[in-house]
Length: 506
Image 1 (tube, one colour):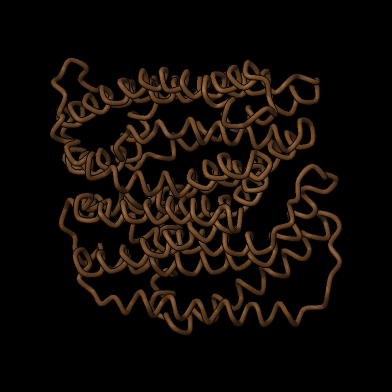
Image 2 (cartoon, one colour; image 1 turned 120 degrees about the vertical axis):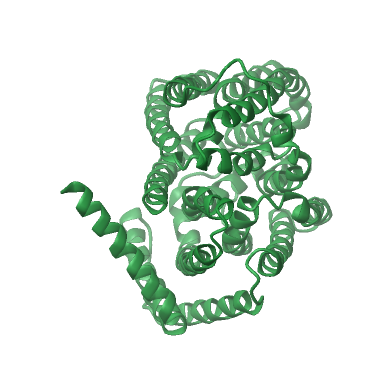
């Protein structure tokens, strides 16, 4: 049952990421082409600044999931209801604080972006973009966490797919009809407001939660420890934009957003496995199934390293030709930044390599034990970004993120090996060495390919297929040679899942 639920979650999450990637490429290019790089950078920057309100969560999402695993496994409805009640109370407070925060950002943000935009123009845009966030906190986040903990994350994924597709269609129509950026963002906000409302109705009908119960605030007592983890994740996605807004301007933010759109798309594909598997690992830990935990983690680790190598090596070789075509005809900013592209890609690849270690550590509820590493990662990112942005611009913030991510990845691998899995850290080092060898061979093979002039997306797609074939073939060859047993275990799991599905159909 755990495997089947993990499969459902992974497939739904993967479908969501594919839809998000496709729609994510459409909307920014539309905004850049219709309103300019400055508007695109402004909208992206506003979203990042408004996102700082999520720091008030104290990382409670992971803490609540960890607290829910055991009562859900034991069908303890009263305990689940009490934990949900405490979580709802917290997020309602955050929602109302967000109103004041949004007004403050709306009033001050125009001064951060200089004289490029009128004060009222920016003020209204901030309030419109912030509307969807308020509704999400007030209605949706608690139930989303509950579904994730109960291995039903596929429900939220399917709702998000529907909202994303409708939103993209609406944005395209509004832009084609000549609507201004405020109307476009307002239409988008209305679409995403509907999602948490539907989620609220679904959960209340499915779980029959006890409404009149005492809130179990002790269940989220680790939220202060979870703050470090949440802070590190938050700064991973927000520091660069804030630093660039303050020191480089919104056009540089637009350039950053285009490149980050590409690498984050691949990162989201990798995190689909985390979304589908964390609850399963939490269930194993709750039941003290040590053997199952170790065998499943080793398989997850094998998949994660293999996919990360395939996907991010392909991105490193394909991103510059793609960007050149994507921003063709746009001359209001310089989008060709090779050094930035490579460093950003490397940083996100290392971030994805650490996902298995992050997932199991949080599933085990070890927030306090690992919080200091999270705080150090955040400090490295902030300090280096501020120091390097004036020297190297975009490249500087990418270097800062890379250093911070590298530190935390090593820290996670060491901690999990010693304190949860009780295995040698050299298993992690060995996997890194094997996949670095694969990357070197892939680059060597790519250099031997005939030079190809790429001027259209059709030509890029042909080139992408060739590169992806090489990265896949070389990575699978090297990893199956070095980890033959892991590959056999993966085949057994796939066959078991397919057989189970066939039997259910019969």
